[in-house]
Image 1 (cartoon, rainbow, N blue to C red):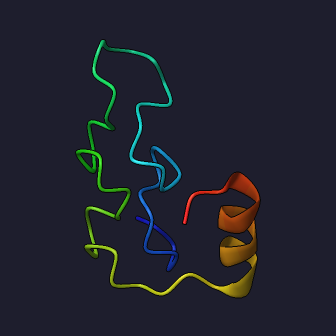
Image 2 (tube, rainbow, N blue to C red):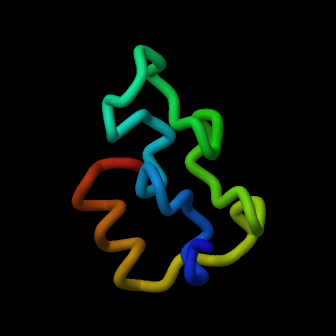
Length: 59
């Protein structure tokens, strides 16, 4: 599902409801953890993903 990044593909690893389809603040797939539901976040993000996360200020 995550393509090796370890982050939730629906919320892009933020853990937040990015679709605004419900009143909930957290993502419905990862339940706010930001980790991929398939691998549990065990896949390590590559350099490009780490750079994107740094730009977003996520982690």
